[in-house]
Length: 169
Ligand SMILES: [Cu+2]
Image (cartoon, rainbow, N blue to C red; front, side, top):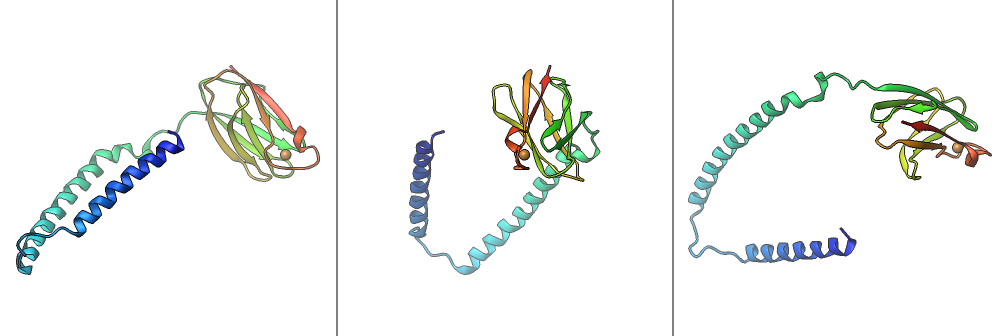
């Protein structure tokens, strides 16, 4: 959706909201009700409202309980260890297509970026490569080809030349 279309939708919704608010602000009952009858009606609605929300909440809780992720088995993923250092990456040569993969990424010296680029040159995924720490980047490749890896964190004089790559097939 273009920004002009979004603005148009916003204007339409805003005008409708203003009309509704002005109408409600000027709305009057023909005959004024005594306060006691308004209070009595409000309490009746409140009692049913509490029961209704309890039923809905308990039903939603019971029907969605089995979808909680805690008891489900963890995804079986292939792990690949990646070490970044000034000014290269230690990478696998080939990575499988259509398989859950976890890159376990660390650095041997300073902070680096581990940026994976698709064969067409777009950023696919990225994570920090940090010394004394391992970051886990989970991906699934759906397109085969040569993926390049570039450092996305200025790490020294040859940062711009810090590149690598691997094949996905
Ligand atoms: Cu760098």
